[in-house]
Length: 147
Image (cartoon, rainbow, N blue to C red; front, top):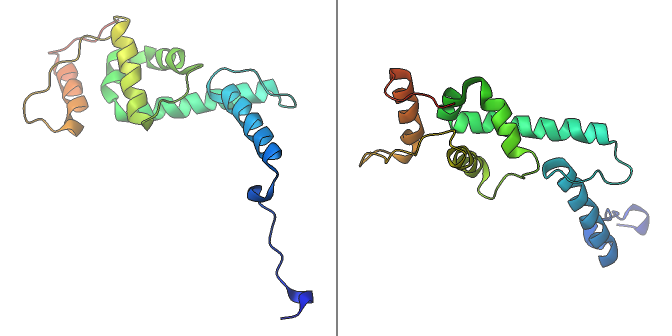
């Protein structure tokens, strides 16, 4: 193969000088903080658009938590969206993903007196079934919603 047809390798982030990588990482951290942790908008970014995107990310988290913990939606009713936004605004998703987010949200509600204490699971109840038992009890009237 001649030099005229030699393949060019694209320059990647690994080829950037260490200072440039650090500057990029810092800029990304500021942008991420603005989107998920209530931080200030980085220079050059439209604050209004960042607020819209941050609200969209909270909405996505809320939907996921609602799927993971339908009992919370049933217990909070029309307050679910407002309560979740208050919890999530300025707080990034915790390590452990959506299940950890749902657990932390429920813990916050419980500590604020918005949820009753978590009942002890019956021996032998599979872990995946536990949130649904609460919904069944709520729908059957054996547990009343709080708030």
